[in-house]
Length: 219
Picture 1: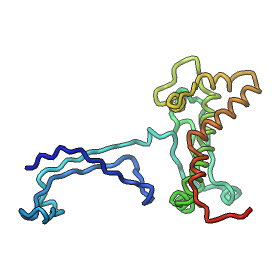
Picture 2: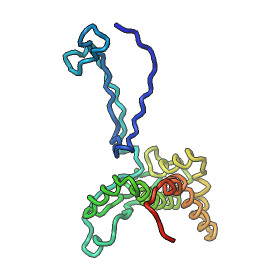
Picture 3: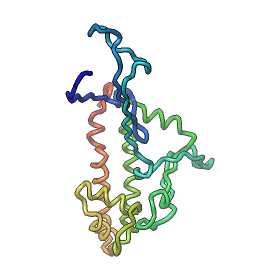
Picture 4: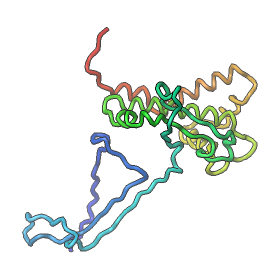
Protein backbone atom coordinates (compact mmCIF):
# COMPACT_ATOMS: atom_id res chain seq x y z
CA UNK A 1 0.00 0.00 0.00
CA UNK A 2 1.13 3.55 -0.73
CA UNK A 3 0.55 6.32 1.78
CA UNK A 4 -0.31 9.28 -0.42
CA UNK A 5 -1.59 12.21 1.62
CA UNK A 6 -0.95 14.92 -0.96
CA UNK A 7 -3.92 17.22 -1.60
CA UNK A 8 -4.70 17.79 -5.27
CA UNK A 9 -7.19 20.20 -6.85
CA UNK A 10 -8.55 19.30 -10.27
CA UNK A 11 -10.52 22.01 -12.03
CA UNK A 12 -13.27 21.15 -14.50
CA UNK A 13 -14.61 24.02 -16.62
CA UNK A 14 -18.15 22.94 -17.40
CA UNK A 15 -18.98 26.04 -19.42
CA UNK A 16 -16.38 25.25 -22.10
CA UNK A 17 -18.17 21.99 -22.89
CA UNK A 18 -21.74 23.30 -22.37
CA UNK A 19 -22.16 21.01 -19.37
CA UNK A 20 -23.73 21.45 -15.95
CA UNK A 21 -24.97 19.66 -12.86
CA UNK A 22 -28.66 18.84 -12.41
CA UNK A 23 -29.78 18.26 -8.82
CA UNK A 24 -26.21 17.48 -7.71
CA UNK A 25 -23.48 15.04 -8.69
CA UNK A 26 -21.58 11.92 -7.59
CA UNK A 27 -17.82 11.63 -7.12
CA UNK A 28 -16.55 8.05 -7.19
CA UNK A 29 -13.03 7.36 -5.86
CA UNK A 30 -11.27 4.01 -5.91
CA UNK A 31 -7.92 2.20 -5.47
CA UNK A 32 -6.98 -0.41 -8.06
CA UNK A 33 -4.20 -2.92 -8.64
CA UNK A 34 -1.37 -2.19 -11.02
CA UNK A 35 -1.07 -4.22 -14.21
CA UNK A 36 2.49 -5.29 -13.29
CA UNK A 37 5.36 -4.34 -11.03
CA UNK A 38 6.73 -1.92 -13.61
CA UNK A 39 5.90 1.72 -12.63
CA UNK A 40 5.43 2.72 -16.27
CA UNK A 41 2.83 0.03 -16.86
CA UNK A 42 -0.08 2.17 -15.63
CA UNK A 43 -3.38 1.04 -14.15
CA UNK A 44 -6.12 -1.18 -15.43
CA UNK A 45 -9.59 0.38 -15.68
CA UNK A 46 -11.52 -2.68 -14.61
CA UNK A 47 -13.88 -3.35 -11.73
CA UNK A 48 -12.10 -6.62 -11.07
CA UNK A 49 -8.94 -4.67 -10.19
CA UNK A 50 -10.61 -2.33 -7.68
CA UNK A 51 -9.35 -2.82 -4.12
CA UNK A 52 -11.39 -0.14 -2.35
CA UNK A 53 -14.08 2.28 -3.45
CA UNK A 54 -15.86 5.29 -1.93
CA UNK A 55 -18.77 7.30 -3.29
CA UNK A 56 -19.34 10.96 -2.37
CA UNK A 57 -22.78 12.38 -3.17
CA UNK A 58 -23.60 16.06 -3.49
CA UNK A 59 -27.32 16.59 -3.82
CA UNK A 60 -29.54 19.60 -4.44
CA UNK A 61 -33.31 19.64 -4.53
CA UNK A 62 -35.74 21.63 -6.62
CA UNK A 63 -37.11 23.10 -3.39
CA UNK A 64 -33.84 25.02 -3.00
CA UNK A 65 -34.47 26.90 -6.23
CA UNK A 66 -36.44 30.14 -6.31
CA UNK A 67 -38.47 28.95 -9.30
CA UNK A 68 -38.74 26.20 -11.90
CA UNK A 69 -39.66 26.53 -15.57
CA UNK A 70 -42.77 24.73 -16.77
CA UNK A 71 -43.40 24.29 -20.48
CA UNK A 72 -47.08 24.63 -21.34
CA UNK A 73 -49.19 24.90 -24.48
CA UNK A 74 -50.19 28.52 -25.01
CA UNK A 75 -53.45 29.58 -26.64
CA UNK A 76 -53.55 30.19 -30.40
CA UNK A 77 -53.63 33.97 -30.01
CA UNK A 78 -50.51 33.95 -27.77
CA UNK A 79 -48.25 31.10 -28.91
CA UNK A 80 -46.71 33.00 -31.82
CA UNK A 81 -45.53 36.02 -29.82
CA UNK A 82 -45.44 35.08 -26.14
CA UNK A 83 -42.33 33.36 -24.75
CA UNK A 84 -43.03 33.23 -20.99
CA UNK A 85 -44.95 34.79 -18.11
CA UNK A 86 -45.35 34.47 -14.34
CA UNK A 87 -48.76 33.00 -13.45
CA UNK A 88 -49.57 34.16 -9.90
CA UNK A 89 -51.80 31.87 -7.85
CA UNK A 90 -51.62 33.35 -4.36
CA UNK A 91 -50.36 36.52 -2.71
CA UNK A 92 -49.93 34.77 0.65
CA UNK A 93 -46.17 35.13 0.16
CA UNK A 94 -45.37 35.05 3.89
CA UNK A 95 -47.08 31.70 4.48
CA UNK A 96 -46.88 29.89 1.14
CA UNK A 97 -43.99 28.29 -0.73
CA UNK A 98 -42.92 29.61 -4.16
CA UNK A 99 -44.71 26.76 -5.96
CA UNK A 100 -47.92 27.63 -4.10
CA UNK A 101 -47.63 31.31 -5.01
CA UNK A 102 -46.78 31.24 -8.70
CA UNK A 103 -45.72 29.24 -11.76
CA UNK A 104 -43.27 30.35 -14.45
CA UNK A 105 -44.82 29.26 -17.74
CA UNK A 106 -42.81 28.98 -20.96
CA UNK A 107 -44.19 28.44 -24.46
CA UNK A 108 -43.83 24.70 -25.15
CA UNK A 109 -43.81 25.34 -28.92
CA UNK A 110 -40.49 27.13 -28.43
CA UNK A 111 -38.94 24.54 -26.09
CA UNK A 112 -36.34 23.37 -28.62
CA UNK A 113 -35.41 26.95 -29.48
CA UNK A 114 -35.16 27.78 -25.78
CA UNK A 115 -32.76 24.86 -25.29
CA UNK A 116 -30.68 26.00 -28.27
CA UNK A 117 -30.55 29.46 -26.76
CA UNK A 118 -29.28 28.05 -23.46
CA UNK A 119 -26.49 26.21 -25.30
CA UNK A 120 -25.45 29.09 -27.53
CA UNK A 121 -21.93 30.08 -26.48
CA UNK A 122 -22.09 33.59 -27.91
CA UNK A 123 -25.43 35.00 -26.76
CA UNK A 124 -27.17 32.21 -24.84
CA UNK A 125 -26.02 33.02 -21.32
CA UNK A 126 -26.69 36.75 -21.77
CA UNK A 127 -30.22 36.16 -23.12
CA UNK A 128 -31.05 33.70 -20.33
CA UNK A 129 -29.82 36.22 -17.77
CA UNK A 130 -32.11 38.88 -19.25
CA UNK A 131 -35.09 36.53 -19.07
CA UNK A 132 -34.21 35.54 -15.50
CA UNK A 133 -33.82 39.21 -14.59
CA UNK A 134 -37.40 39.93 -15.67
CA UNK A 135 -38.76 36.95 -13.75
CA UNK A 136 -36.83 37.68 -10.55
CA UNK A 137 -37.77 41.37 -10.65
CA UNK A 138 -41.43 40.37 -10.91
CA UNK A 139 -41.13 37.95 -7.98
CA UNK A 140 -39.27 40.39 -5.75
CA UNK A 141 -41.62 43.31 -6.38
CA UNK A 142 -44.75 41.24 -5.71
CA UNK A 143 -43.20 39.69 -2.59
CA UNK A 144 -42.22 43.08 -1.19
CA UNK A 145 -45.71 44.42 -1.89
CA UNK A 146 -47.60 41.58 -0.20
CA UNK A 147 -45.19 40.52 2.56
CA UNK A 148 -46.64 40.51 6.07
CA UNK A 149 -44.15 42.47 8.17
CA UNK A 150 -46.07 42.01 11.43
CA UNK A 151 -44.84 38.43 11.94
CA UNK A 152 -41.97 36.17 10.99
CA UNK A 153 -42.34 34.51 7.55
CA UNK A 154 -42.67 30.73 7.20
CA UNK A 155 -39.39 28.86 6.81
CA UNK A 156 -40.12 27.70 3.25
CA UNK A 157 -42.18 30.69 2.21
CA UNK A 158 -41.49 32.90 -0.80
CA UNK A 159 -41.11 35.79 1.63
CA UNK A 160 -38.27 34.00 3.46
CA UNK A 161 -36.48 32.98 0.26
CA UNK A 162 -36.50 36.54 -1.09
CA UNK A 163 -35.49 37.92 2.31
CA UNK A 164 -32.52 35.52 2.36
CA UNK A 165 -31.40 36.82 -1.06
CA UNK A 166 -31.55 40.37 0.27
CA UNK A 167 -29.62 39.48 3.44
CA UNK A 168 -26.91 37.65 1.49
CA UNK A 169 -26.40 40.80 -0.58
CA UNK A 170 -26.49 43.31 2.29
CA UNK A 171 -29.96 44.64 1.42
CA UNK A 172 -32.74 45.39 3.93
CA UNK A 173 -35.86 43.47 2.84
CA UNK A 174 -38.14 44.98 5.50
CA UNK A 175 -37.14 48.54 4.63
CA UNK A 176 -37.90 48.04 0.94
CA UNK A 177 -41.19 46.32 1.78
CA UNK A 178 -42.26 49.25 3.95
CA UNK A 179 -41.43 51.70 1.16
CA UNK A 180 -43.33 49.74 -1.51
CA UNK A 181 -46.32 49.20 0.79
CA UNK A 182 -46.31 52.83 1.94
CA UNK A 183 -48.52 55.75 0.89
CA UNK A 184 -45.74 57.78 -0.75
CA UNK A 185 -46.24 56.91 -4.43
CA UNK A 186 -43.07 58.71 -5.51
CA UNK A 187 -40.99 56.74 -3.02
CA UNK A 188 -42.64 53.52 -4.23
CA UNK A 189 -41.42 54.24 -7.76
CA UNK A 190 -37.93 55.01 -6.49
CA UNK A 191 -37.87 51.76 -4.51
CA UNK A 192 -38.96 49.74 -7.57
CA UNK A 193 -36.23 51.40 -9.64
CA UNK A 194 -33.65 50.55 -6.98
CA UNK A 195 -34.85 46.94 -6.91
CA UNK A 196 -34.54 46.69 -10.71
CA UNK A 197 -30.95 47.92 -10.51
CA UNK A 198 -30.23 45.51 -7.65
CA UNK A 199 -31.52 42.52 -9.65
CA UNK A 200 -29.41 43.52 -12.67
CA UNK A 201 -26.31 43.68 -10.48
CA UNK A 202 -27.26 40.35 -8.95
CA UNK A 203 -27.37 38.77 -12.41
CA UNK A 204 -24.19 40.52 -13.62
CA UNK A 205 -26.05 41.68 -16.73
CA UNK A 206 -23.59 44.37 -17.85
CA UNK A 207 -20.41 42.37 -17.26
CA UNK A 208 -21.93 39.40 -19.11
CA UNK A 209 -22.66 41.59 -22.15
CA UNK A 210 -19.12 42.96 -21.97
CA UNK A 211 -17.72 39.42 -22.38
CA UNK A 212 -19.57 38.77 -25.63
CA UNK A 213 -17.31 38.78 -28.68
CA UNK A 214 -18.99 40.20 -31.78
CA UNK A 215 -17.79 39.33 -35.25
CA UNK A 216 -17.64 42.99 -36.23
CA UNK A 217 -19.82 46.02 -36.39
CA UNK A 218 -20.71 49.06 -38.40
CA UNK A 219 -21.33 52.57 -37.16
